[in-house]
Image 1 (cartoon, one colour):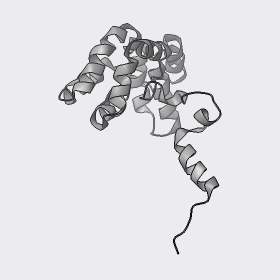
Image 2 (image 1 turned 30 degrees about the vertical axis):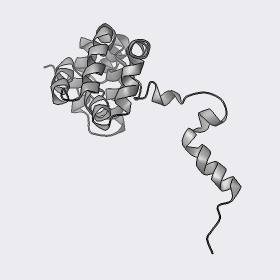
Image 3 (image 1 turned 90 degrees about the vertical axis):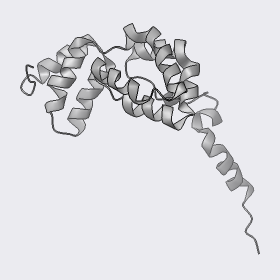
Image 4 (image 1 turned 135 degrees about the vertical axis):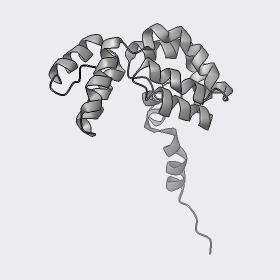
Length: 161
């Protein structure tokens, strides 16, 4: 005899993928932004949302584009790294469109020198783990005051390169 799914379980199975935000009427889950995880840098996130939301949504629906945006670009802690990521994915039209759109937000998204040096000269020298991850999060927020403060706190582990 075939097993029948109860109406309650069927409803839960149908609603679960929508996420709690939709079920209780709060709208789209904020962690998804415009389809890609939002930037830690608030001014960059605001600019990319206002300027490139459609490009981000299209990219998020393409596995190769999303991989390039999430694993490569979002993981960069320097302008040099971003410049190296882009050629790796230029064969993907949606990735190129996202990058071209993102150029409009460059002044908001480019890592500030003090934050870049925090990542390269301090965070890299920390043992992998929570403290190093927190250090890199500060770099990604791209706030000069926060980066300067973190660098002072970590002066003992920072190199002077």
